[in-house]
Image 1 (spheres, rainbow, N blue to C red):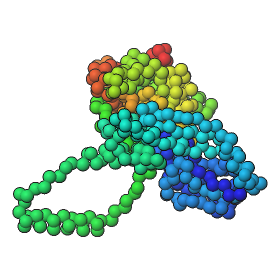
Image 2 (cartoon, one colour):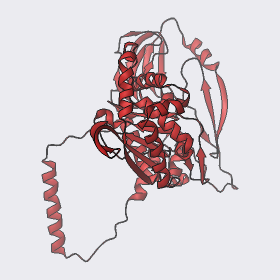
Image 3 (cartoon, rainbow, N blue to C red):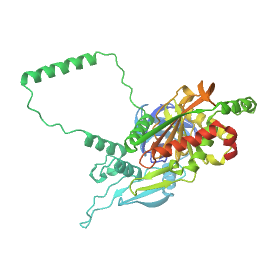
Image 4 (cartoon, one colour):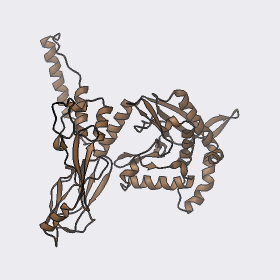
Length: 441
């Protein structure tokens, strides 16, 4: 029996993926749960498991192709099954009707023991009394349109059943951003010809250059979109300071070898996280988001710390949840665990969302000062530079000290410069005196 395996809905609003690599070939025998393909989504690269035992008879896509949810992408020849049995199994599914908020859309979410296909949503017929156009779109797409200031009812959707996709919204924004070019007649014909000839010459020279075009991966596109959204939505301000962490360096050096024997790699980051949480509790606006629509500041009394992590696929931000409830040792273990799994592409989607404050440690690769971009929709981010030895003045004497550079970027709509300086002062007090950090944490 030929079984057509459709690309499953893996959640998080992801509607499509790019086929990175086939892990099987036509003719291979596979078992249920065996990985068939490696697919890159907007957030992670994941492996798609086989829903059945059988033999691969057809691979529908080539590596590099885009696959939408619910499209058949591999055909498996199964054993001991017939079409009638399969049809009965498909009938025995649980259906529920879902009405999307303010969209006037009715759809079915089909749940089974195998594959969860995409819902087939239909637009309700518009009556004469309806004045507003009904739009089929996910809440994520509606939020993106709202953030970009675009009326979603004016966009023609290219998705299934006319669904407005993220790409449709970005395309509409690009069209709106293009300046209207008015015709100019003041240029003399001879001057115009000279300009055209010059442009053609430059184009020929450009084409003769040795260049290489590299298409963006889905994860890189997501990073780019997020950076643009943050930078053009939030008015950034960055405060910088240098902190004498000589005592912290000595404190860590006393214990790092002993902890290493127990399999614990103690870095400076757990201490910094502890100091950040203390500062967040004193100045909770740094642990908030700004609700532009309702003009409200949403303070969060939980502390999920994002750790910006450099990977081969781009920047990822795995999250340490409830970091305020964990010790220095527990934080050290979890930091190593989640950052390692992020680099090895073994991180779960749920571990990449929900942060309330982010720390980016570019000092680990030799960076000193930087201007970090806020992880939207958070209100602040801390950049941590490389600890270096340099001369400073202490007690009116010039001494050699270990100095840690910090950069704090924050949302200037809701946080003033004085608050930024006070936040850094708390970090300075605690990181300069690690004994005080442990007493107050």
